[in-house]
Image 1 (cartoon, rainbow over the protein chains, first blue to last red):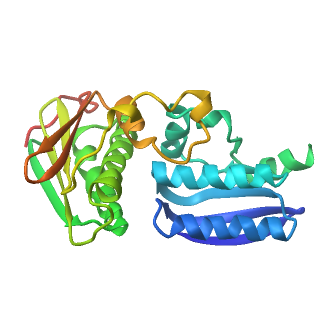
Image 2 (cartoon, rainbow over the protein chains, first blue to last red):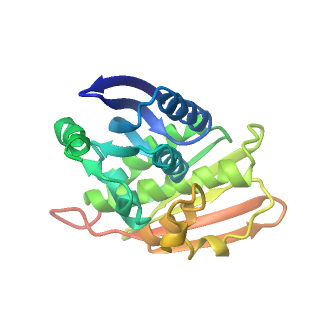
Length: 114
Length: 148
């Protein structure tokens, strides 16, 4: 899993590339979110456009990121969620906690609109 | 496509990608329903993840064996590890409970149970846990399921 970070209108966008499936990915993600909070960057969009697939361990990694940001006073939202990932979100009811967006502009605007 | 495709590999996460590719190819030959294909692929990845993580405890000198058994109207997938087994029953029910939605682990079996038509666990004496997943397939568009 490769993670690249960029900013748009003050919102952090994490572009993920590869498969999200546990192993070393968990520590990489954890460190990324803690660094963002240390820098005061609390509003994060995770772009899953480059994610081929995800398993339940990878879903746990996203939940960990979500709870880390929420406890730090921020939020995490998902962008470009494939049908395959969306079906996991629905069956596990995680669609109730993750806000998902189809375009980057919508995801960024969701933070700016409050 | 009737027949069986077998893969055996060390307990390393990087092999999940090969499993996914093979699974995609097998399913594509049997069915053209995208939702069904996704459900099978997701479930197979969960079963193999469990075998690597919980069955073989990520020990790379222990193998995972997976068999895709193609029937005329269904696909059976058997995933075997070399571990001591685990109590899977508690994982079958407890995820959609809102109290558990933030839990980081324990969704794999629930996902498989909901996405497949049948899910069975069996301890193989002297070997490990065997998980058997089954999905009934609708015929491909334009005809019956092919039987090569």
